[in-house]
Length: 318
Length: 281
Image (tube, rainbow over all chains, first blue to last red; front, side, top):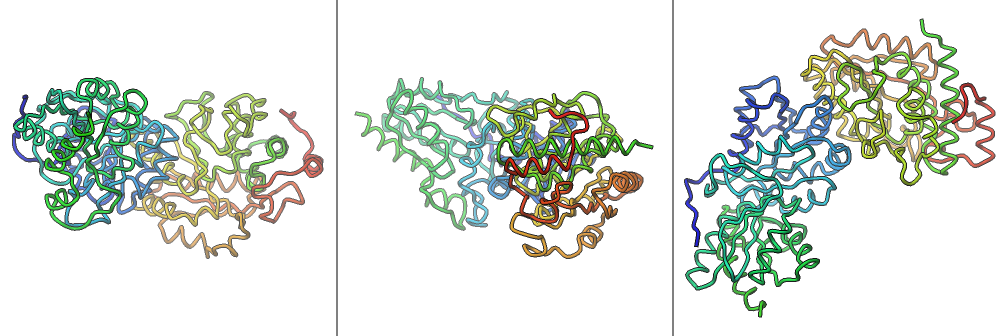
């Protein structure tokens, strides 16, 4: 099977920062807004390079979203930066009316998503944001898996007209996708080919899926791993093509099983190709304080959980 | 010097439009719309420097944002009568497949509207963003916005109001419609706001009063003063004292007609008090 090499752990939020720095040089219409989290969002370099295009709004996320919507009137491409919780749940109505319904070209960039935020605990660990955002008509929803992909996605969304939710995280994780890749919104990436089970993963769970596939391979199970970085619009064809071959599927995400990637995949399959599916996701619960690794183990969001899910779904296949 | 009689005639016609629009669909918000008729007419006819055609970016012209979107009848009437879309389209207000939704939106592509509003308290932020974009584009035109007084109870406003002064957004003139009424009663009964002037001043804004916000000459004078105070490092706020339901005697000085349409008989009385000037749609 095809294997991937971790070129060194890096945080996805730094990929966002690097992408934004690049955009600052190449696209003069790109502006950035931040709600008192410049360091956490890695926006320092953009701010230093382009102080006139950087807007510190203070701890006022609702105003930040509205400002961003207004800045599009006049041709600017605003990138807002704060934690995922404050990027979505806190400002849902502002995004709904001033951005999505108004079709404003705002890029909502959200760090510290999910349990891997770690010790800060459940107040900050949003596990509902993919669901919230994918329900908004016209909203593109992206959850990147590593530094390189996050950088590429940040650059790519500037050229896409329309609102985008870009979700990434805090911890340093494996960096394994190609440097300077071209990011294609809505196009799934086939990572390993396999015949027995499909594993569709997003965000931090993509690397875990690859680790799981190695163990499954050793057990004689051939897993096909697909990186679904774009949850909306979903690459229906990639999913249907894969399960047509394997006959069963696991979805893996750092999100509630209600409203996440898994439900989007289930909708596609129920309509076009009913298939046994297992969900690696949180089970309608809040998180808690702990290290990222402890939390991912406790809430069943790692390679071990994917392996167990594979064994379960394979039994359901026949 | 503008011809105030022409503006007055247009205002009377706008009042008729408002009454007929909400009556036809037995829904909508006539009270605040009537109270702001003089303001809208004066703003669009005399105050703003506008292009003849509409484009979303609005570079090289003044912009207007309506934050209290429920007074869409007055907004639509004045937009139509200022040439943004055919006056006959007012017939479609709140009907299915119309561009004239219950609350204004860009979603159906109605010329003259640059953002959706209706869920209250979001207009300050959007208008400030547009003002910041104008600065980035070296566009010296102004951004105008209108907000209800009850709407100031929404917290997001104060985030924007604080941001504006802190960042010297001095190319915005935001008007507060001080009619003292909201859905459940007077603003003093529902959630007393104290001195709106003192609040804006404390937040670093320049404040201009228009004591009679239903008098065209007073609006002209007040808005000219506001304009002269723009570009001086501070945002400018206009406190426009209006009478809800102005021009239709039984709708005045009460919150009762905030979101209620007149019946046939009430419409006839209202229209009789505002005789046709420029022709009904």
